Image (cartoon, rainbow, N blue to C red; front, side, top):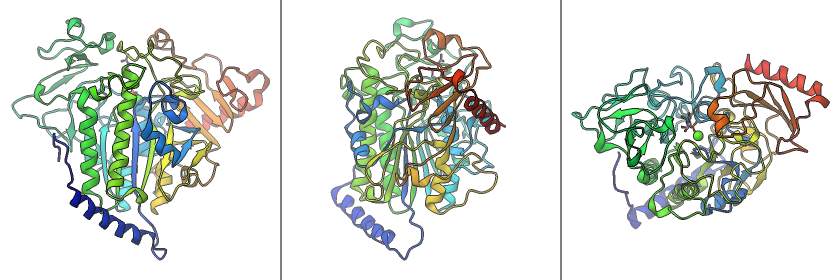
Length: 511
Ligand code: NG6
Ligand code: CA
């Protein structure tokens, strides 16, 4: 189904589809019908911070599409991803299980699949409810069983854990292999052109960033100085497949085309789309249409591209008359980061913007900015516009969406997922009472209290070098977010019983 060119619907086609979907909406609104099955779209951004969107205070970049969604939907101020890095958060979102249960951590680009195909997942639960399911964009949950042969069928992967369709960036933009994988095959790969990937040593003859820094359009740190692809050195080494490597500046367009195709093809049946946008992770190389759109350099321009991408999803739903029958959930996988391995002026050009909003910390941090995500729920006609301070975690989307579509969470599946559908839909401001936050140590929220467990492993050097406020300390910490949203005063000495209670609660959860 992959096409290089955008598929344009003719006006008459578009009209015909709109009429059809209006008819099906009318049926869905009929009170005699039992469960409605709205389409569900999760738009998941990479490394977008709470304060990186206009409605939450961004100034150096405009995000009109996201702002429109927030102004007509519910904008959450205390909704979290499960961890301060990508793989663990995505694992939790798709499995309803805390990532520490699986020791899920940031994966190399050749890691095996870390989701157990024997267990229920968010997409497989929705399949059972009659949904056609698709994942488009960043995966980073591993593929295959180890020692992947990239030239054959690459499995198990998304298709084995509940997705009918998959079109992937296999790991991250800064990791090899820099190819798209559609339904288990590298897209357009010539069978004579063998792709080899290695995370330990150089393979083939392609230049690396270490050998040829003069070839780079962005200076990179040692970790990101492997094989040069598209004038950017990556983590890891690869050879082969040159004709089918992605072009960084075209990725957003390619993904948008896939999303449009998926929505068009499934417009007459309930569908679930997990659209994992690759912006605004490094390397930030947005399309020339977006260069200079912000005052913040490539990081801000990538936010502008991400906003456009999000808008294309909303526009497609509108064109097909599907908006009123589609629940859209917009969020991110971990907090913001400026310098993450490439010199791209993110620090120098930040200006007065606060990527983490009023919260302390960043990506990798156990402080609030690590997991408190920009989060918007948009469902025109069904969800009332407003803001919500409900404490929510993405781990709960599994059980909450199961409730929405009338599906049971079977024993053994989604062990940590709680149903908070009413909070996600903005009907109540009451969400979780207790919620863990995972980074390089564990945090726990109990309403406005925040407990941070002492670290058990040393702070990584790169975290110290980057001056990330990791929240790591050998001493336990307690903050009162009601009076101290920025986690500036450790009040553990004056509230030892609360800290003790939270420590025990955390130990119980971790068991
Ligand atoms: C880190 C990388 C960072 C980024 C991150 C994953 C180094 C020094 N840093 O290990 O650049 O790729 O992994 O980001 O290699 S995430 O959003 O997918 O979690
Ligand atoms: Ca991320």
